[in-house]
Image 1 (cartoon, one colour):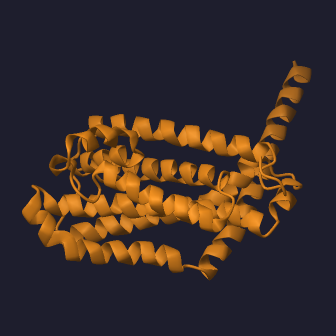
Image 2 (cartoon, rainbow, N blue to C red):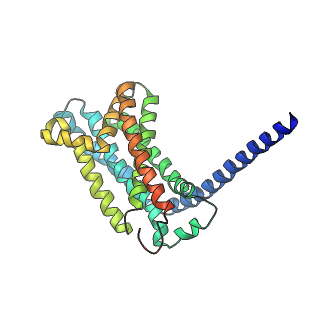
Image 3 (tube, rainbow, N blue to C red):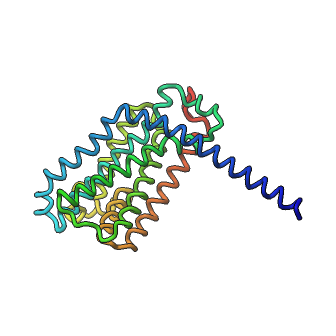
Length: 268
């Protein structure tokens, strides 16, 4: 009996050590990326200050144009500028290629998933902070009703940030340069946000836009955040399921590209 217990105990200890080592590698990469972000915070600050200004400027127009205008202007701009932040997530990965340091990372003991997690974890926290601050600003300054369930809002923010982060990582493995990534993320953000009804409510847009909106992740984010503010659990979970699926697909593609050797001198 003792002979059976000892190997099992050693196996568990070995697995625990493996998890600890993996976590250590992820934290080391994350710490490095936090330092890089702190050295160049301009883009993150602009994506926080600019939507606040637009909320104040556009509030009277939205209140006159649509019912619940204060909620529409806040959530619409939160979605639009969170999509724009995809470029920050992508650049945190793509910059390794510009510096020719990605191959060095791959030569360490860190696996593709660990490297990706370490690179995007600080950006994930940044996205959570951005959306939380903007929604709080919307309630305090713009007059959006305080959410009936803060827990639902937290779930919505966590899910939407996850989907955005995965999309940004996938785009980073496709783009050939930071300028190309910036063009893709900026143009894509404006198109997807417009189709989703973030800038102009779908109710006053042509019918074909409402149909096309279902192809945009921003549409599900907008509906999810609206439902979260209203306390509609069913709607939050339904839209969250779609965004989680999008995030898993994009994240899986990013890991696949990284595992195949993305970042070397030739493109895949």
